[in-house]
Length: 175
Image 1 (cartoon, helix red, strand yellow):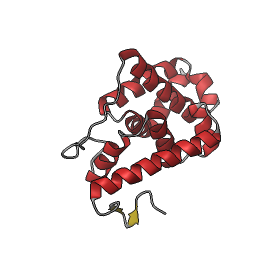
Image 2 (tube, rainbow, N blue to C red; image 1 turned 90 degrees about the vertical axis):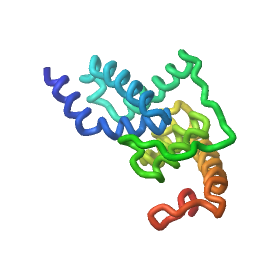
Image 3 (cartoon, rainbow, N blue to C red; image 1 turned 45 degrees about the vertical axis):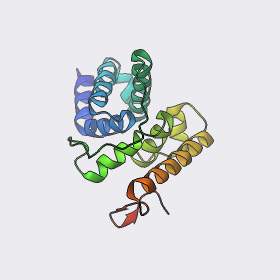
Image 4 (spheres, one colour; image 1 turned 30 degrees about the horizontal axis):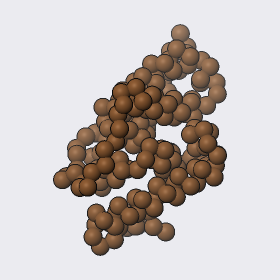
C-alpha cells in the first residue's frame, strides 16, 4: 500500500508540471490531459520500480511515447495555416496573452523540435538527458533546439512586425 501513497504524493507534487509539459508537447489541453492520465495510469501499476530510478525521466519519456502513439493511431496531423489564430485562448495553463501566443507559435514547430525546446527551456534539462528521452544523440538535440529557436524567432518577427516582443524586460529567444 506504500507504493500507492508514494504515487499519490508524487502526483500531487508534480501533476501540474507534468500537465504543462504535456500541453506544450501536444499544444492541446484535452490531449495533454489524456496523455498525462494515460501515462500516470500505467505508471501506477509499476510505481515501486519507477520510483526507485528516476520517475521524472520515465514519465517524460512515457508522455512523448504516448503522444507519438496517439498521433500515429488516429492519424492526427498538424495542419499548417497561413494565418495565426485571431486571439489567445483562455485556459488554466495559458492564462496570459504571452503564454497563449507562445503556445500558438510552438504549434508550428515539428514535434521533435517542439519536444526538444520544451524539455530544454521548460524542464531545464541538459542535452544528454534530453537525448535519452528523445532517443537520439546530444548533437541532434542541440540541432533540434537550434532549428526550433530559429523558427520561433522568425515567427516572432512576423507576428510583431517590429521584431520580437519584449517579455519581462528581456527579448524572447535573443541573446
